[in-house]
Length: 285
Image 1 (cartoon, rainbow, N blue to C red):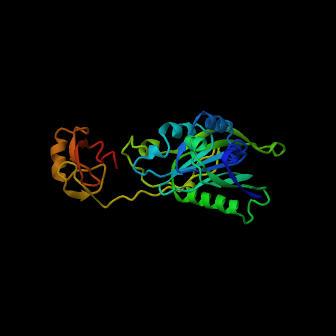
Image 2 (cartoon, rainbow, N blue to C red):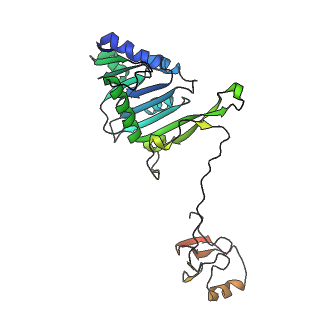
Image 3 (cartoon, rainbow, N blue to C red):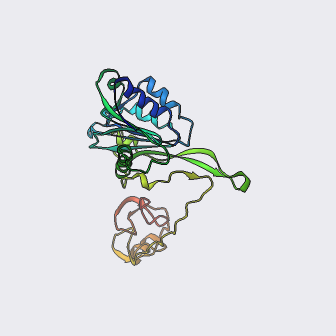
């Protein structure tokens, strides 16, 4: 069922989408500003780890806080199962859960709901027809693709303990764990850049309590040549003898293993006194 809506019908539809979500709540809005009423709607899900909240926002690349304030961002971080994604060229708006959705012109912005004339197309879905072809299904899938293709700023996932007895199938919620938090960098409070941009598919949907991440370790490659930590000349790599013979003879007169030296044995980089016979390689490596 598709229905054109505006005014109070549009407002109530979006309120219902937020309030009645049971598994997934997808919010796509370039601008987000929450008043107390919106927070009451979202608070309905605050302690439910079984609802994944996906927030996609954008615009104002040079001043992110104009798209969503830091306080509203921090508000969303308290939820137990949430992904927050930034899309710099986002202009579309969509609100959906597993059973209903709205393709609309309205931002999740308190001013827009109170003052603007906005339109939307409302759809209802059942579990059986969620994968059939319809405008809402295509909008839902397109928004999920947008979320998957853009940068994750914050992600928190629930951790469960799986029940082992066959007669007691299921899982117990233990806690939620933050897997990524780039808030400080994203809002300009930190100049530190992450090594790589993370996407939604880089993270699991949930965590298993007690599970140990196992990956095959890489064997560290030992270089053939190193550098004398006192003179910087090239010598065979050997952390137990990181000096040239001539430098070692001088050092051996005193034998102070913690005496500050000049170079890194592995790279030849100047160490400014941070290397020694006990620590021949710069610790930042």
